[in-house]
Image 1 (spheres, helix red, strand yellow):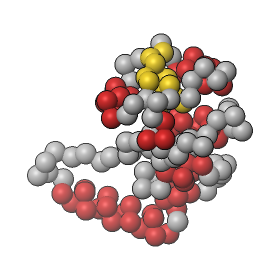
Image 2 (cartoon, one colour; image 1 turned 90 degrees about the vertical axis):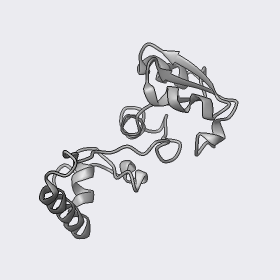
Image 3 (cartoon, one colour; image 1 turned 180 degrees about the horizontal axis):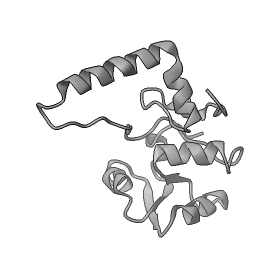
Length: 140
């Protein structure tokens, strides 16, 4: 029944010890945060109903829910913190590269190839997190 972190208020959430994003959101909710030495132990406790949820990177969560634990786990909504792959250049340098990159990205999105590449590599578009739940094609 959970679709967001807000829905998890008062619930017990596991996270991998030292996971920076879990530590940063800890104070924004009344959820109980329980650290684990590894995320697989937290997932085991979730499946055994000792936890109400586990905080993981969105990509890890979507892969677990659509792979090994399909039918047992699901991602409870879009990522809490939108993360993605970024092109980074030195400020004031490589403006031509940034322009070309953005143009190429726009062309990939317009043609539909962008979505196919994301699915092929098991990635997702942070602007459309549900795209991570799509089946991965074997070729594109």
